[in-house]
Image (cartoon, rainbow, N blue to C red):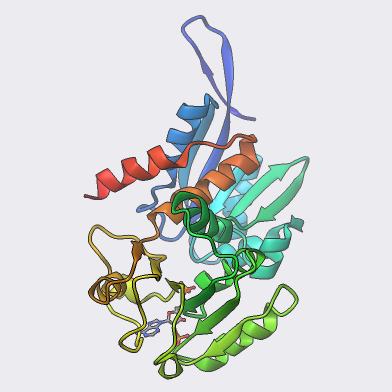
Length: 286
Ligand code: ATR
């Protein structure tokens, strides 16, 4: 059963329900982003925040489905559970073994992962920086990296290097993603003296106002420095890139909006204009 409301003319409008589920979830910008997308595309949807206690993810999702919910965005720490509860998943979700977009249709649960395509679209379309033929460095080897590697590989970079403090985790990712493409694993120390076109910080360091242990001189005038975390000012990673005169700096706000736009497309079949919403969020952050 969809949420029903009457217009002034007493015409019944059925509003499809969506939500973002997480723990915590209060900080999520997704309801605002999707409300903007819905307004801009004329889609009648309702989009809420759904909190789930740890260990109660499946129960909360099943409750939402029983109430007529049509889809969910899944955020930390439930992307793995969402993957496991999906009846069918896309290739990119299978590669990531993580799902951030659930669709409920005909009694089935469909899982997809739009994080990586969100990152790629932000870089390739919004920033107009090609990844094909480029040397790409990704810092980190946690869930954030796992979620984006397959779409990055799809772009056919000349090389894709994964640097991590715990080398074995980077090596495990290289092994896991071998069916989708070739990556190299490295520690931070071995990055000294090397050059990359695109350097993506996917560690959690920015959340703690820290810098990953990158060697000095990693950036140059041709490099794009991209932090998957977004914040009001520059993150420590972006400050370092700026101090080394990196050609372009970007934080993860564009990725947040692009991944949401891909979810919206999966659910509603319409591609909203992302630039306006990114701009609006940027103003709110300021
Ligand atoms: P997520 O799922 O958000 O990626 P995670 O799985 O905890 O979170 O991974 C965090 C990533 O940030 C890891 O790659 C972690 O490195 P380790 O695997 O060596 O732990 C990285 N990270 C966190 N703090 C770091 C720090 N101070 N310096 C370098 N890397 C750090």
